[in-house]
Length: 395
Image (cartoon, rainbow, N blue to C red):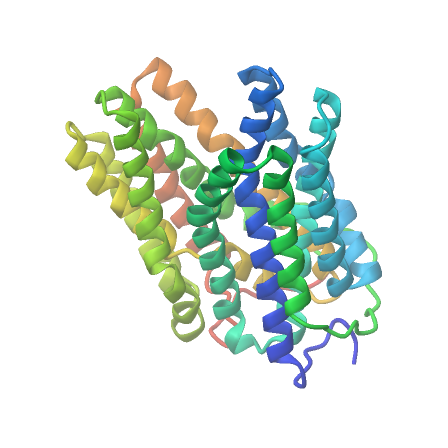
């Protein structure tokens, strides 16, 4: 049995291993959202320095994509996933220790590298060891776990910061993450299949084509989380009311996220893509015409439903599309390219909101979402194995 083949003897172990490791990962990521600003303000840094450190993770993940892909081919998915989680845990601990800007930049960039390793490693374990008919469900559960931890972990770590020493706020999530990985049990490291040379297994133009829809979708998703509080500020809502708006969109997101994977496996990826993009575009349109807190709340709920229905979608599509023999390099590049949208979305909101108004920014994001849907349908199509997927060949 090679790393590149599906094992029929350990699917449950593989699923348990992936979900436990992914939960540990999301605990660490969710807590850093709160801990990095708190830590850096405590150290006397300004907004510009905090923003630079936050952005360093994205830069680290993007620049390491090629290397992560090669590492997957050389060492295998299980080792890559474990190494990523251990590296992230160590980095989180050290962020709570070092005080200079340079070390904080390097450490959070390392978190970005580890994030890429964990994502690619989990996708490869699912592709190699989980039946194709359950692929969407496993990735859907990963997406649901991510949303749940983003809702719960920041609150808990904020309480820990206030009641314990700051260093314990960094140590506790690492302890939880390590415990989850230990509780998952062992997953055998299978021999690594020979990976072919020659990049990601397909021409760059085709890689760009497959990435266009995910880039546009991630731009809309990232823009949503900046646009909602800005609309709240424009309507003179209080901080607590703005917090409720974010809580509402997150709660509806979590509410529907568990069913995404089931729909993808039973009805195909398009059965998730179409309602996801339609709901999100509709939410942006409602937001564009909002003139009261109640209308903004309705838009927040609709946007949350749309985003929740996409739980695990991009992970699943990437796993489906990865060409045999080039899985690691492809998934590394595909994830890095898709993440470009996370940088573009907030930038669009900032520039358009400042120059033309937030309503225009919301309409543009609705257009971005519709363009993303068109790209998914035309440039990718249905990718579910056995459901007339796009034909993927290694070149």
